[in-house]
Structures are given as C-alpha cells and as structure tokens.
Image (cartoon, rainbow, N blue to C red):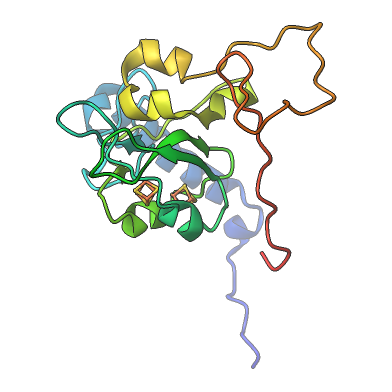
Length: 202
Ligand code: SF4
Ligand code: SF4
C-alpha cells in the first residue's frame, strides 16, 4: 500500500519554522516545571523515597515463632520451587520434640533471585516472606548479595544492611584448596558449600 507523502509548504521544507515551534514547546515545559516543581512526576530518588505499593515483592525475611526461633522447618519446598536455584538450606535436627527439623543454614543468593515469589507461595509454614519493602539492594561487593539466615531472621535498618550476615573473611594463610574434613565442619562460622547445578534446560 502506497502512503502519499504530505505536501510541505516552503517554510516547512527549510525546517527552521518547525525547529522554532519545537523549541517553543520545550521552553514552555521547562519554564512551567521551574516554577511548579511540586507538580512534576519525577521522584528525586534516593533523596526522596519512592512510595511503593504495599504488596510489592521486596527482599526476603524469615519469620519467627513467639520464642524467637525460626518458623522454618527446613522442608526444602522453597528451594525446590525456586526457578533460579538461589536458595541454599542445610537442615539439622530440632531440639524441640514437636518439630522434626530446623535450618542450620539458610542462604539466598540475591544476584540470582528473580523476585518471582515462588518460594513464598511454596512455603507451608509461612516462614518466608517478601514483605520488607526493600527493593534497593546495592553493594560493590558480591558477598553482600548472599543473605544469610542471621540477616534474614533479624535484618533491618542501616546497621544490618551493612552486616547482612556476611561471614568473617577467611585468613589468607588458610588452605582453601581442600574441603573441610567433615560436612559439618565450619570455618569461622561460615559453611563452605557447593551450589546446586543449574539445569541445562534453563
Ligand atoms: S523470589 Fe523466586 S527466584 Fe527469588 S528466591 Fe524466591 S523463588 Fe527463588
Ligand atoms: S522457608 Fe518454608 S518452604 Fe522453605 S524450607 Fe523453610 S519451611 Fe520449608
């Protein structure tokens, strides 16, 4: 289908008139915004906080019982449902006779998380939620994006944002070439672990 070109007048063909018209529109907006800044839709983030919807999926947290222990029963449902394979759980026997297992380690790799919320949906204990409203997760250190159980249970505020349950740095003279003697062995409170392989179909 042939679309006929519109016939331009001589002053439209030299474009100066159209450029001047465009500049008038631009200047009109600029001057109006200078004097009516409060009405502008721009959010001056991060100085000005952005009001997020209450149901937005923020960074995860682990919920606790009345006695402060985690509600999580280490059932691995969230890790199984996670499409990004970014949840790492290690279970141990619970000292409580009515609870079979509790997590010994519960880490989330936020660099792999896609904020889908499947982990929250899969949890039968309401033990994991994404209702913190924290969506600005930034750091210049990759380790900061591994959220450990300690931070997920109690982390909030600036102080915790700094710590994020990051493990103590490993001593330089420590031999990292061989794994710990037993699977239970930890190094400075941090458990070395293998990430589950991502299926090739993903
Ligand atoms: S939000 Fe999705 S990708 Fe992130 S940890 Fe939960 S299930 Fe995995
Ligand atoms: S957070 Fe919920 S789904 Fe995940 S291991 Fe704990 S109890 Fe199971």
